[in-house]
Length: 412
Image (cartoon, rainbow, N blue to C red; front, side, top):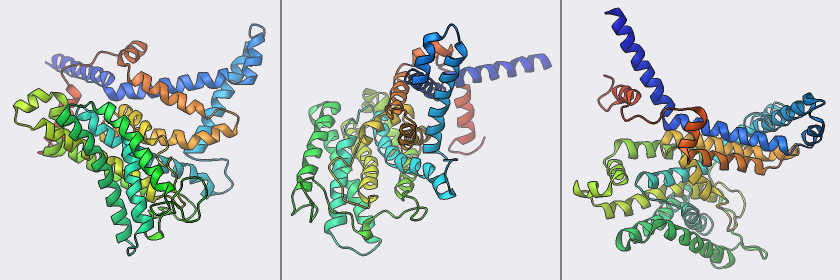
């Protein structure tokens, strides 16, 4: 009897380990690892000392191997100093500044990625996060520079306008999808250009948003002090409440997708629109609502960019956030914890790139790492083949255990 029990326990442990190794989370971690490996190769083959020592590798292989190790260690040490903790800093404020910069960069990435992830879960492709950021930032900038309101109320109104503006811009895509069948990828890409043109027009027009004493570059006035997102850790750091908004967005996204009726409908439509329609769900209305909610999350990123600034803004206020958000959503498997962790990772890349450049490495290396991470994420069979991972299982030992612990009814 004891032997049978031990065998059953061993079988369940083995099944659980296979499920963990076959899970999306494991593939995501291994994809990140492979991305760093590729980045290390680029560091090595762009290092002058290594390229010189490779010429006499047969005579002194230690020189080439030493140069390779030094290039990798110096590169990733610089990334650590630039994104986590600068152990070479002269004072504690400068030493901890890198982690605050990582959080500052991660805030809008996380918020925008939540919007993209929600669309993914509904079976839609929101490639228009850039346009939604620009449209939301446009109205947040207008409220923060052209409207005078009391302290506190001004910030709340500007924040709500950013969210509602981006949500309305996203809802247009859902409406066109539902009523005409227009493909959301084409519509969102075109609307990115429209939003960029509208914002540039506003920034060029003195009566609208152009800086009072601005030159030839399209630029707005700085947001009023009453509408600026307050800093979190004092004037020594640039980290502001935009990151807190992103965390609130993560919790809200989790509740919507995992605990609300609306999220249940979103997931049903994403799994099978025909089955959802048969079950009585209005699929077309769900498309409009989903794109509106998706845009609302992106609006948090718009508010971060428009209200977190202390100077006038230009039409490139979105930077690469809109497209980086797609990568973050993919890496995070469109889940709230995954998007949070992926956003922090990509925020670290953005914060650490200048430190890598300071030691002579190309800052584009972080872009290469990000690109290969996405490549491996998009090719699960490749990752499974490299690490000999088991294929995903239909029966889920870990998932059953997880649901038993965290079911709506509490612990079992």
